[in-house]
Length: 244
Image 1 (spheres, rainbow, N blue to C red):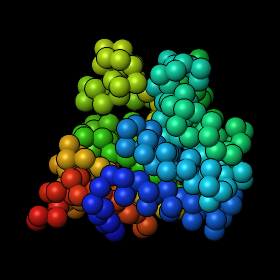
Image 2: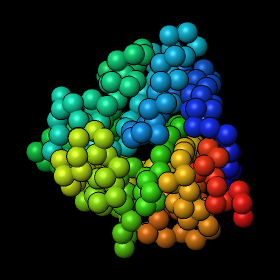
Image 3: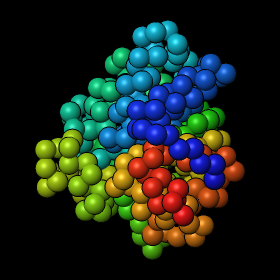
Image 4: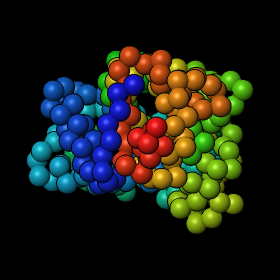
């Protein structure tokens, strides 16, 4: 995997926003896979700034978000639907019909997962997948387990993942215990992947991802199977690899 190290999270976010802008310039119909969580907020802030400066055009782009909490409707302010509207969708010229998120309030969860997979296929697949990394090595909501699910699926969340999302809910106890997520197979089908990781708290996870050993206990380690994946780190997240 190609590794890029930036001095600060801000520099990494600006560079990634510019890279997304270049992808949209090269292919106006670009299909993007997008993450949520704290690490993504500065990236979306930079994309909004680029949009306001007419430096990026999303009018023909399509997006697919990685995951959503089970039981939350799109209108729930704690949902990832609301997160994306708040941080990106309401501020750029993305067409609502081209933004795709899982419906956490779906009555038939299996049918919703199949619908999402069909939508990705109809869009021609994902051109650029942007990922974040959990402290336990998860991407999307693909948690460490004895096995990984290939396609979009229902997942029980680990305590560490629920704790990381407590900022959306006010407390960990309010975070749903289950979620819907793209599977590892769906993620690996993207044509290009950029994994963005910032902060000292993620350094150990980064080391495990890059160790060369693929294990379902570190789901992100399976990115090693992809032919075009880049790992973008700030200096803090790179601490354990830059010193080795």
